[in-house]
Image 1 (tube, helix red, strand yellow):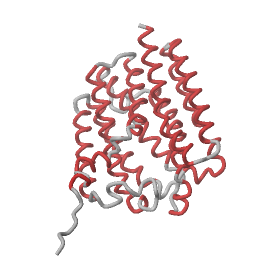
Image 2: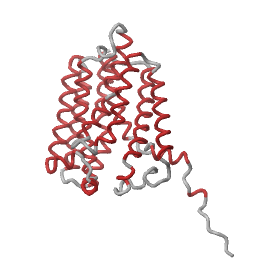
Image 3: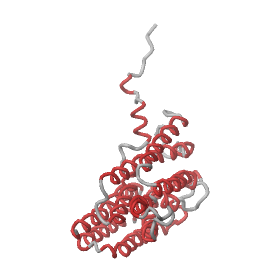
Image 4: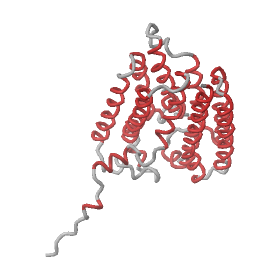
Length: 307
């Protein structure tokens, strides 16, 4: 009798490899899209360098919460993802990781992020509960909302009020957690929402055919042939609103250069998505973190030059 052929152990992904795949560790664009507006808000709230403690809290917290969001999203979408070629091989979707295991990993990372917030101040802790609620709602929004990208926009922009609460909550401890976040922060959040709508619509354009077949709701489906125009308008709102809201900070030449470079990137995005090819739209989405990084660099340089 011939011995059974066995799959070499080296070809079987270990638990760590599956966990890293689940949280998209090899694809950092997701947490970078969260990180740049959060750090930009941190610099604006502080008026420059925020210190190593707050920087570490926001960088680590962003990575942890984005990873936790991936766990929840993949569990929520596992029945849909198996019918989409781009997502069919995700660990939960293909059964390599169980639902409870994925949720446990996500919960653990969310708790670690919460522990980091607890080192800041009470206002930040209170706002973190609101941020968590929005993050939990998003994966299910696409079943009921015609443009779930708007819900994602709130979730991916909530680092902005969190940043202001972290700085101003310590500076003005007599204020309540609601009072400590100024109108400037909410204006930046709304502007950043426009950016999220732009890049997540590009993302939705990649899967439009699959989503139509599955009956999913996305901005790309809702907008139809107005999708490209909508994306460009959203980019314009993002850049214009952040330009106006940062004027009181007097960021000067380097911020102006960053805006020009950002506008050039937006034009390139139009070239990529105007024919609505999967490859062009996906590349445009993946490149978006460079737009956020450009504006952040302009803010950092603006404060450094002013000082």
